[in-house]
Amino acid sequence: MLKVLNFLSPIRRLGNRKYSLFFPLILTTLAYVSLELFAAIVLSDRNALGSSIILLSFILIVYTACRDGRRGGFIATGVTIAYYVYLMYARGYVGDRLNTAVEATAYLGILYLLCAFIIGWLKEKIDYLLGREADEKKRLQTILQQLPAGVIITDREGVILESNAAVQTLLGISLPIGAQLVQSNQRVVLSPEYEVLAESTLPILEAIVTGKKLSQEEFVIENEGAQVRYIHAHISSIQNGADEPIATATILTDITQQKELEQLKDEFIGIASHELKTPLTSIKGYTQILERIIEEMGSDKARLYLRRTNRYIDKLTSLIGDLLDVSKIQAGKLEFTSETYNFDTMIQEAIDSFAHLAKKYTIIKRGDSIPAIVGDSSRTEQVINNFLSNAIKYSPDADTIIVTVERKRKMAVVSVQDFGIGISPEKKEHIFKRFYRINQESKKFSGLGIGLYISSEIVERQGGKIWVDSSKGVGSTFYFSLPLVASITDVLEGGA
Ligand code: ADP
Image 1 (cartoon, rainbow, N blue to C red):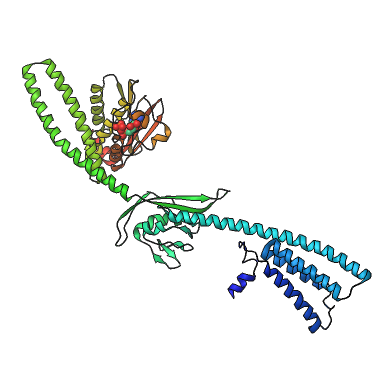
Image 2 (image 1 turned 90 degrees about the vertical axis):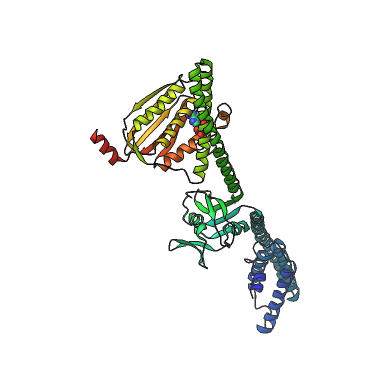
């Protein structure tokens, strides 16, 4: 039944560019033969149908043009004209009657042809456009299926419009086209089967359904019996011409290999820096013995060289310490102590040691006094040291650095301002990332690109924030804030 309907219905054949010549020929011939027989046998009067033949012809031509394009319409028109000529001959038209009938047939013929042409042309145009869209879709689907990245496209209601084979491999679930992601009892399920989806895929699917931004883009997907995979997910909204969201595109990339390499690298850094630290501690010990010996010898030259050696040892120790910290952060093992300490003293000591090391710079301290704060004093000092050493390193042509301490609501805010090379706006968001160094600058200044990464971890782990204001060529101000823990501060201040 459906097949017959598909064969006969012009609407169902839209997009089908196979046009038949025989169908219109047979259909119209059969229609007129049946009409003749109907009039002769059922109505017993061959002229009974009168002008309703014109209406029937019109319907036949429109139908064939809609089904088989211009050629279908032309064939139906040809058969119709032939039928009209037959009628004139069979009914024995002569004289004026014949002339009028011929004239009418000619006008009708032109009208039918015009109609067949316009309707047939429109039909072919629609078929072409629909066909092109279908081809385009096929092309896109073929590309999608072959992509190594997982692609999920849903409409605004969470109905899956596209989903490729990689999605199945990466998420361990199949998202068939037409199924719908819905939120039910605070879970995301796949309608209509209500298949419960793997726990680890939920944040991605939830973001697709709710349209909320992903708070993080990297996920660990654990499927039963399958290997653990690390996946990077990026969800973006697809908008129409009027900037209204119409669909969501999610791209999933397998970053397992990259993660494994990173882990290997972190492990290597951890082991190497640990192995380097041990002999360095012994070297430092021996230089202290040497210092005493040289003191006894009284050689100024030896004392100078030893001081230099000590400086390089300190530099190396701090570098190795930073590398160790990075591997501890990666392993989630960076430890913190919690004590009440004098914030003013800690800052002043950091400033003094830099003022001593870099005599060219004047380090100005201003702002509020914060006598007590709770946290890890040596870790916080590490942040200030990093800010100060960067301020000196990246402002070779300036000579002033301003350190400001402020109380803002329940936070202590420290800023270190320099008048050096500055940072361009597009680079600012990256500088707190691990091993990130600004390309052009990194060649001129030594460093590993980990100081700010460690600083941000130290500040954030203590409940604070870290940020930067900077203009290229003008200078930078690096900030960090830490909670004051008001109750303790108040007690100490009250007692002073
Ligand atoms: P390092 O200084 O060892 O490269 P950091 O993590 O401390 O590593 O800094 C990361 C990058 O940020 C630096 O390479 C530099 O490009 C940029 N940067 C940091 N501080 C400043 C500053 N005060 N002025 C200009 N650029 C800076």
